[in-house]
Length: 416
Image (tube, rainbow, N blue to C red; front, side):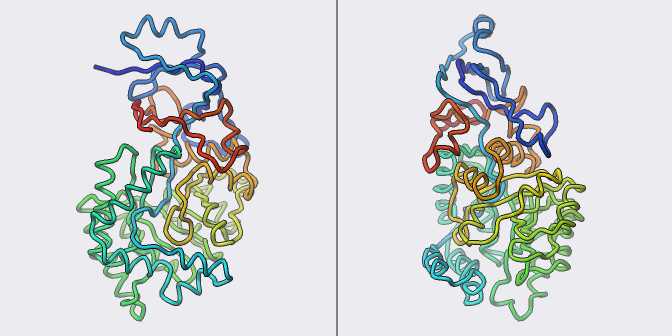
């Protein structure tokens, strides 16, 4: 039997509707399409949106519909967090304390810390250990309103350890209510055993890891950290091209630490998303816009590392597609709360509340190529949404530092 729920007297129903499109650019980015005193009927998908005075007809024509009164409540689409690293092991709080004392991220990495510190912990962990860490963080993100989350590998840096991370992600996909998208990031750094022979590790990536990941269906995407000290443009192109040929879709860690030209590479290869972009060039901005590559901005990482923020306003004015995500990871941004990302985007990247909410919902879905089914509240889309404890969506940023999520629904079922 189809279970239907009718939500009535919704103070603000924030649909973020793109009216058939999968992205909003320029001035349209801030158009949330808000309905006042609204009503919404859902099964696993959204079946009807209207005004509360129209509900009697809906009740009369739908047997056994459950009615939920949302007086003084706001409903928004579930957050789509399209960039995380939440399956890992170990703790790097000591590194965070050192950075506050003035030691740089690059200095710590050169000493064997950073990604390599987490790598050592991951290599000593079982799939179950990795699953348990990811489960805790995924469920916490869910309580903050995230209904879809992308999770990367990238802390194993060996065939066995990378596959263990991906197997843990697959177990999360199978057992948790939150929607999960898996990304292979074997090219996150070079493991110490191959620092003197980086080409040998790239050969393992291309000829062992990528084929194995693709054949077992362990990831949908492949990602590369293209930046100074990590993977060169030429190395990144080879890895990403091999992944593409194996049937994986592409994402890129781009221009986080230096103006490196990685955004241009992402556009050249028609990657679905290029992420970070703190040092993106104007040429990169233009190339990404022309290619339709989503610019996924991660203000929590700039905040944690005390770096400059990505030029969000420049990219918005250039009609780029802007998404927001947490980058939740153990080293440079240990935070799974998308509400906090909205606050950082508004206060430090000069985005409006409306722009940031679109970027954190519809455009997160666009970055994952799922905007046809999630990311906004439109007829026929999946019923993934959050009921806030406030009548006004602006309180998400205005009253910051608290959790405004009262209920979370995924595919028409209440999960929080």
